Length: 174
Image 1 (cartoon, one colour):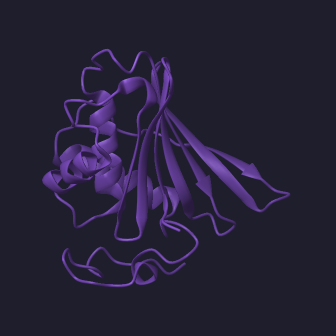
Image 2: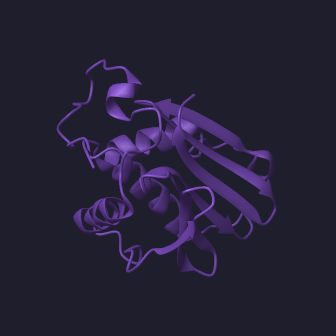
């Protein structure tokens, strides 16, 4: 399988999204994703977020599949796979009152996913994406929040479904 190297796109260069991500997903296998995610965790010392083993489920009739990873009782990650076993999209699901402090693990997990999908990004770049979504605004109404931003062909969305569930998603921008 052909994958794009992390040097194929430098920050600030104007390239069509298809040259970076293609049209079918994130162009990253689950093994590549796990290695990049754990690499970001190690580089930025994001304790408690390492992925030990992704639980992959196949859907043979559709030729696709999914993976899941549970970080703790309140945070889990789900990915959708294409027929070629590359990642189509990734979602983080958080339970608990969005109005209460989380200890930072949710924002840290979001930043780690952003770093994983853009190898050239720094932690400050990830914080900029989170800021663009609106999560760092002081006047955020937590219970009906739905923020989105697009960067380099990927859409990053954070939404609160109700007082106990929130979701962060990374998909190919349409």
